[in-house]
Image (cartoon, rainbow, N blue to C red):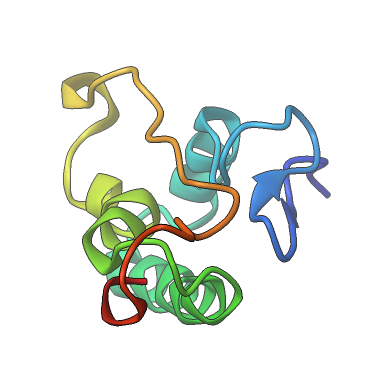
Length: 98
């Protein structure tokens, strides 16, 4: 079992503290779901839904990129950067923009 599981409701990695799924967990998930890309997308999609509920201030596109965007590209083509998510909503933004 991995130590790189999500810590909710902030969705950071329990193993390294980076936004989940971290690079290590992505590698583990690729190995676990080898040959089953649809199953991987369904697994991550369910986490994306929960993360969207836990972090409603985070843009949907950022969550999609974080949870699903990396699954369609081979690991050697992916950029080695981690998107950062705001820890709390921007209180200065209008209500509709949060």
